[in-house]
Amino acid sequence: MEKTWLVAGLGNPGIKYEKTRHNIGFMIVDQLHASAGMATWQEKFSAHVAKTRYEGNSLVLLKPQTYMNLSGRSLARAAHFWQIPPAQTIVIHDELDLPFGNLRIKNGGGHGGHNGIASCAQELGTADFVRVRVGIDRPRFGTATQWVLEKFSTDEEMELDGVISAASDATVSVIRLGIIRAMNQFNQKKGEPK
Image 1 (cartoon, rainbow, N blue to C red):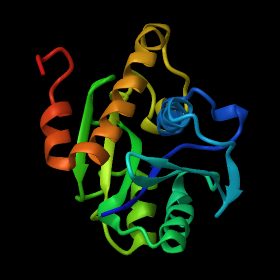
Image 2: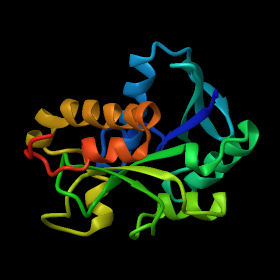
Image 3: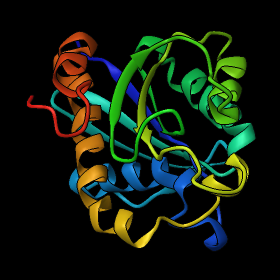
Image 4: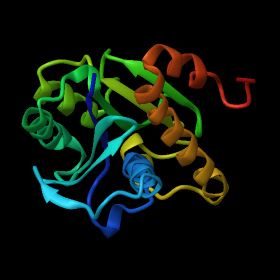
């Protein structure tokens, strides 16, 4: 049976925030967009939106342009418009509680202090959506707010393409294989055998 999947990458709009840790969700959705050969982004629901067919399903990519703390507004409007249930909604976001480059796929749960995830749960009326959590590590200095709004370090930049590619693959695996098999495949610590 055909399904429609909504994949949202969280971040902040504008040149000022490009390539910052908080915008890793945007980067991963951009990778999905490029690899799927999708049409140009459209402006809809206060977001950049692209839609295509993928393995017999419909796929909607979303980059909210509301700033991180209000991300859920765009997400909920898109989900309502296409009647996409939370179980077919994937939100990709940065995660302070994971070392840089580590990935975790998760279904539901709390927001862990992430304002973008809190907004998504509030606007959807449920926390029961899929998350692809991408580790950015805790700050070595300064506050968490400063840390997430800074650009990646030189060492991190060297690994960033691989991290984005792995997170893109993890997202596709949720759609292709289901969340349990995708979790079994991707929820290892960095460097662990798969």
